[in-house]
Length: 349
Image (cartoon, rainbow, N blue to C red; front, top):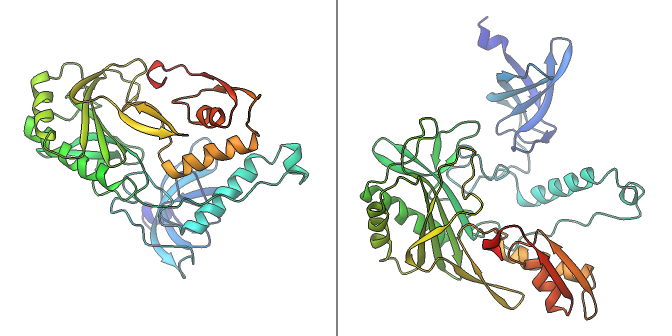
């Protein structure tokens, strides 16, 4: 028997972990190990190959060698061509009602030690479904990489610095994917060199595309040594796209994984450096790096629900901590409350 065969076992998944991996147990010596398996849903069984076993706890990670029995009734075909490779949308093979049920279970578990919840005096409400499960994200963030002589925009594969092409992503608003495709072509034509994290070499690190009302704002996050002439060449090419309202460049030489470091300056290369969003009837300027809930319809519903639960109205005083661009505070103020918003990032205010 080969060493690979000795590292095989049969797993019946009982749950999903935070990374979307099926988790089940299998005999591992005298202990029971939690086996995390790629693309295995609760209730599904498979023979798996152990890829890594933790030296610190009875846990291991594996891939499927052979499926056993019928698939879960909750299994669906993922909509995105990059599913399973890019590390994002890790539950896309799980039917949406089952996703909602699982999220509800996790909230209940997280609040299990709260006395009011533990005694049943307070019930955890069911998860409110999103009106749209695809094409809803108003912001796309892409890591720049290369494949041969070509620029790739995408996401890191799990547990690596290998960039998976995610153009064609079904979760972002369609205009974001369209604009990102233009950016890739313009960056390649301008000779922008994708940044290599291991060698600390290159120019283009990340691309951010934000959408509002069909308009798009782009940020190129680059090493500070990047030639401005190359960036201007990209701007000239993107000026021809009818949806693009602005393009900015943000310098980033940090090594800590921050995409847009706090206090960064956005240098406008084309149009304006912001888009306008409407929050609670107020028009708010949003830059490429500011935080805003990516699901616009769900954010509006959430803000309104907060105002309802707070019984916001004239005479109420509220402090909105970590206010960001003020989504919650604006909804409270719209109902008549006096609100003081506190936010560390000056760009968000």
